[in-house]
Length: 163
Image (cartoon, rainbow, N blue to C red; front, side, top):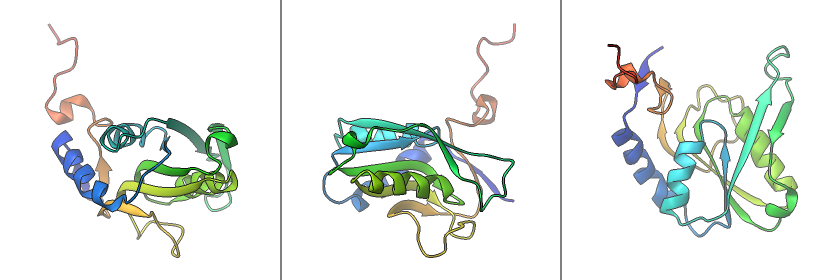
């Protein structure tokens, strides 16, 4: 599989492409851990969203992929979502299970979720009828974001340096 190692400049360009798609205002932003933390933080700052929430979701590996139920390790209380327009952010929509689970739970709490990702992989999505509301780029590559790449892969020496 082709892989792409992104730089911070690449991420800036993706964010710049995503922002114009995010019409209107948001009452809160919900970052899906771990991948959504960095792009969600950048978007919260750029869009002046002051209510920043986090969701941590896990799927049991021992269960068949399509049958696994989400386990929410962390999720905002319903009263923080009810009646609110919530920007749900993750780095990538590949299979889509995590984002669909979060979107569904926000809606069940009475919120109005809008899902945004940096990359969308429609060819890998388990859900052919639905995808993210907004995305910066389509891809079929293995994406390595600067916050997850081994530092030496980005040309940044390990700290402390070997002496």
